[in-house]
Length: 121
Image: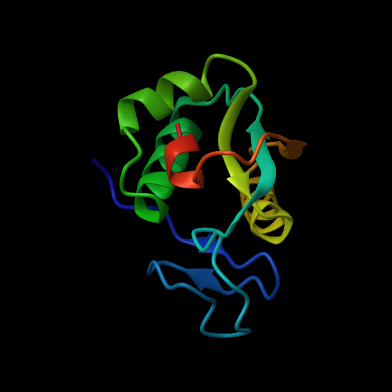
């Protein structure tokens, strides 16, 4: 498994290589910091194999319960729900970060009956 790639903060564009809960430059919360809510994040198919690998590693660094092989399979199989049961601010942070990596994603309304951890791939 490769290390998570350094990605730019979606606010100040500082390169973030370490899994901080916030950007040490501007203070913006990390996409890995999520709260319970009624929103989900849907991600489009990622056609490039290298990008699928980078995204899988990044998702694993944010959410250690993610199965990297399952993540790669889902990223190449069309639109899929990445995460559900989170609040709107958390979903926006995640979508903005995915877009900086050229992985189109969007917010969707979902049932908030379960914990977001239960709704992660």
